[in-house]
Image (tube, rainbow, N blue to C red):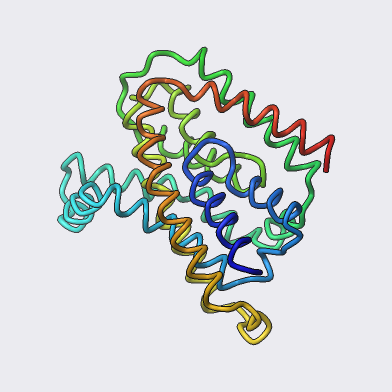
Length: 260
């Protein structure tokens, strides 16, 4: 992998992690176009995913500090309960990662037919948010768990994690700005956990061909793109404009099926 490929893949990861267009699907298509295998570049994979987590932490740093303080007070404040709801939402994806990691990994092998089909599925989910009720309800434990199931489904390349979780929140009648905030906060620990597992289980001798420059380029491009995309997505959800991404996912899905 050279630095130009790293730049492109870093930008793809940073932008699509937060926009409702499936980062995993775009990376699968990017690997096909660039003829590179991101799964064989373990350090690079950890770097770009870590960069998007860092951009989330930067954007929501005040929220995270308040949640951490309230969580360890073990009281019944709204912030403390919110922290428990985020942990509750992680149960579905945690169970998937614990018991079905090999099956999930098998999905990431450049299957553009599957990616295209799942992008079309994502487009339909986003399109039907037009019919979602105008939400004003706070996120309950039930909503948190259902949003968590949506996050678990998004392990399939082509299904957008942010798109599915935000759409689920809107279908449940939750507040738009609260749904976006919850969607981005709930993914921090799962990605960090996955990266830590990769750090301790990876065979670095096998992946020693990756040089430092592509890793640094990928990290910083993913971080900057993620920072911008995260802030942009919050504004988009507040205005209710995610329908336009449905059109994009549908067109890209058709292209993935027919061209690749």
